[in-house]
Amino acid sequence: MKRYSGIFVVVLLACAAGGWMFFGCVPDEKAPSQDTMQDEEDYIVIGLSQIGSESDWRNANTGSFRSEFTAENGYYLLFEDAQQKQENQLKAVRDLILQEVDYIILDPIVETGWDTVLMEAKDAGIPVILVDRQIVVEDEDLYTCWVGSDFREEGRRAGQWLADYLESQGRREEQIRIVTLQGTLDSSAQIGRTMGFQDVLSAHGNWEMLERRSGEFTQAKGQEVMRDLLQSHKEIDVLISENDNMTFGAIEAIESAGRTCGPDGDIIVISFDAVRTAIQFMQEGKINADFECNPLLGPKVSKIIEELEAGERVEKIQYIEEQYFDTSMDLEKILEERTY
Ligand code: GZL
Image (cartoon, rainbow, N blue to C red; front, side, top):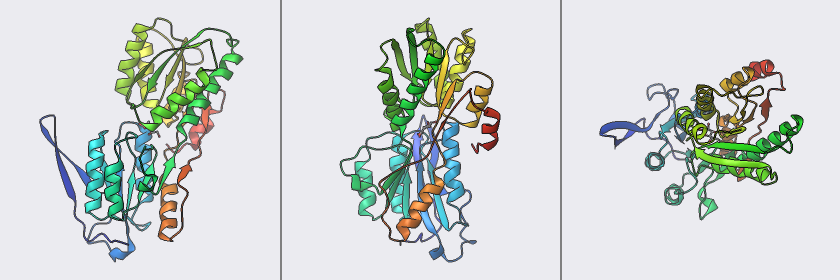
């Protein structure tokens, strides 16, 4: 196994909007400093290229990796925040290859554009583990395995929940007008959730998808787009929001427009991620249902690395368990048990 030959940081300078922005693969805050590192042979060096910090989900996901890949656990973590730009991720992966890390963990912001850089990692003999979002590549051998959620199943579950809910409300035959706040376009989370909900929508002739627009998984954009949707469509019965942070923004827009949402409101709100704040909004009666996307991938990935270190084969596709929540449940108890 290649060893990290010294504690150095290669900082990539990128000019952005007239200013100089430092970013690059830097030792994680919990990484051992050179003078505290015992025998470097004791550490497995991990390079993590993370998408950004655009949502509560993302921050929980980063926290899971940071908590797992610590010196106490035998790791040296190099962390890079791509600030939601694929070009930053491509630079970061090349930087990690230069630093001869032992493993690269990549959460790919979008599904395409990875073949060349993954071929470079393969040529350098560095295994790449994909997490969370997926990619489309010519050669599946360019990555060792992928760990994450079944996004299309999340979308289907949301659609089925809506069908059951409308049935329970005596609205089975009613004309239902729906809008969707999509996540980052071409991300597998967006593609899967949109397709999964569409699978159910297409089975309900009385459901109408008025419009789908991207809120880029952020609260600010979600609020802006929802404001526009409310102006464009006077009658909206359901909002499908592909992550909680867009939902938070959408709730602000709905209330600013003098409308209401949730079980007692005029717009049914169905969200994805199920972060703590969203469950609290659900308690306040502003979200009807939330489909969990489990961000706690750290333990599963470190187990994969242990298996690889032991020379074992690992499953190519590894889904993480997840559930959903709605206002019929004991939300207080759920909040007590939630770790993010
Ligand atoms: C899904 C993840 C998405 C979350 C968003 O696995 O990629 O990105 O749903 C996050 O909150 O921004």
